[in-house]
Image (cartoon, rainbow, N blue to C red; front, side):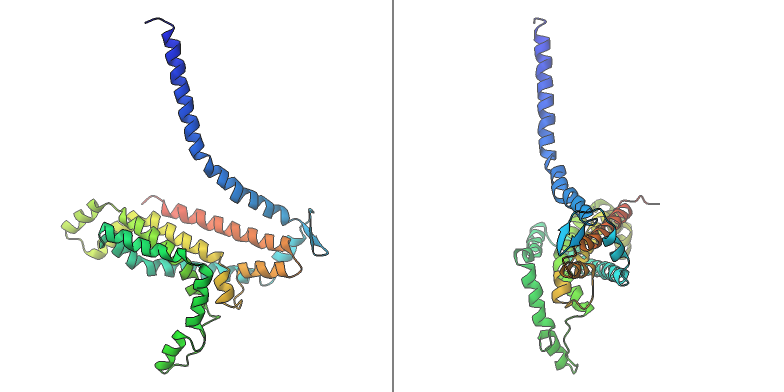
Length: 295
């Protein structure tokens, strides 16, 4: 073998190395591009608009804090914020608790083929319009509807349940429950069965196995389901408008009202930025809790 073969072999290895790195970068590229295009750019635009002004109902580039002063000076801003935050968190917890028995059954009781079928049924609502599903709830909740008729049959008043917190919760559940159900099932199905079998053989009770083995092992996935339910509920406008009737002024309703009141896009941008900041803080704290070390 001549000495000229070694540089050729070295250059060939270098080419394959660079080619593999370029190929890997090509597959990773869509993620930062997606984050830049659909998150960073709109967020930067929101920040810029929050410092603009509206002159004669026209959005005018500016560098003023008038929109921030107006929004932060609203008496009902923080009432709307805590109402939105509290309702969304309560809905997320309730939805997670409602989904858990079904998720547990699919993960530990159902056979793998049955689990796939049930997960397919959980995905089925996404093939229908969310707006249509919300409208269908009006048939059940309105006065003289299905639920009020049942209440009247048992001697109740049978009043309309629209424009109530219960109606808002149903709207949140309609949107978030399938997502939570899928995430919880995946998290529980991936729990190592070895520890469960060992604990059962040692005489551990089912409750102890659930709270000491299954829930800690599935905590990241269960917390992710809770977080998704909160995120979907917090930014929900359709159910707040059509089931809540705008009675409860949540932050999405406030954003809409500000835009309608003289095309005040800078003020709406300020409220949107407050929502995004609270969402990011909540997501960060939740993820930290989900992956914290024991002890």
